[in-house]
Image (tube, rainbow, N blue to C red; front, side, top):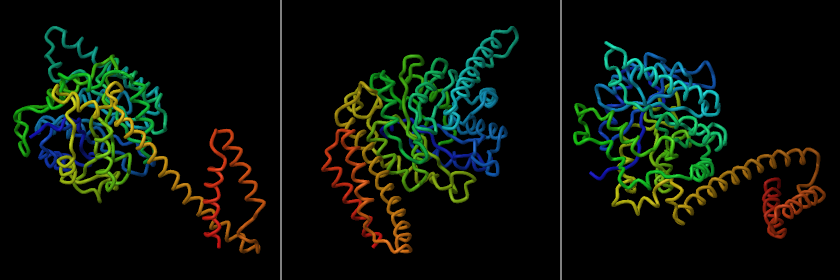
Length: 416
């Protein structure tokens, strides 16, 4: 089977029980592509009355998946203590969520902890009579950093810079408050301004896969180190080669919208996907509306067409399928701008809908006071303001007046 050539991170929002963690991992193992298994054990929830995660006991469940099913695992960290606990357990794929990403002090503390852990481990393994514990760890650590919950591309880039001095770093675009914020990822691509996978024709994400990786085969040779090596081979710590993945689950907050976002992510040249997968989404303890069943994600990923991004034979195709600035083509730029336009248009229509809701309420007040729907003085005031705005922003006054008149006409029809 042709390699998928995308980084895949799949699994439940939260680890709920050992049985659930293993059941989902086993079902996902039928996917004919290598992937990293995700599950959160510490959940930074809005309310303290909601599920906060199973905590440290979940580390042993994830480690068992890694050791027994030979699938590399990943979990979310928000504090230095959590980083230490994961690394001590031999889990070296860590992601930083949007809430933590909004706090540069917290991100720096995580980065410092990774440095300290690496130094401590190297010192310990050199001590006389100390077991070669270093062999149990797949260093360097790989950190997946989500964009901040607020729309702040500079903060996102700063977090990447804090982390990539000491770890393999991969960015994850998850949007803001269930809005895509395409412009933020587009800006990140431009700000990174250095090489990504498209400039490394000799590097192939499919090297994550081993010859014994096959659907349904659980006794395959360990792919954990191979996955780590492949990820490190497609990024260069300190050089700015940072892949960017798409998180369609959090971006939409709606499982029904995940397939179309994956398709759009392919078109925009994302380097992979982090997708929330649950074997019983309706009864999930968190994010139940945005998780999809394993069989669904397997079907989606088998259906979408992935451009060959890293192989020499696919170097031309990769120009239209990578997040790298130098790999841009007019068609790729056009796709990005259209995605941004579509998002702005969706917000515009939502604002018009909201405006009409207010118009209905105003109409009721007018009826109670015996006022006509059309109030010429109010209209003239609005028109004056909009024409002044048009002048200040260099837009044709007649076109702006036409837009205002169309909206005003709709408002009058709603009030009539």
